[in-house]
Length: 88
Image (cartoon, rainbow, N blue to C red; front, side):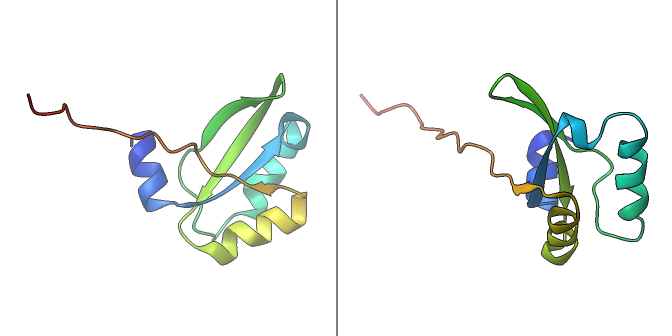
């Protein structure tokens, strides 16, 4: 699944800093998400010289439960404007 497909099918995204998912904590987060609308994969991004993991959900309520439980923030990817060439 491409990043664009993830963004389209799992638009409710929560970003957590790396310390929230290091070692066994990552497994704990995934266990917390069992039965939720979590995508098979998320995104890894760097913010302020620190790696973060973005958990992607199809359902807003599921994303909000993870956000509240682990102190995450809503993640929105920067919009890339695609323009077509100007006619001559």
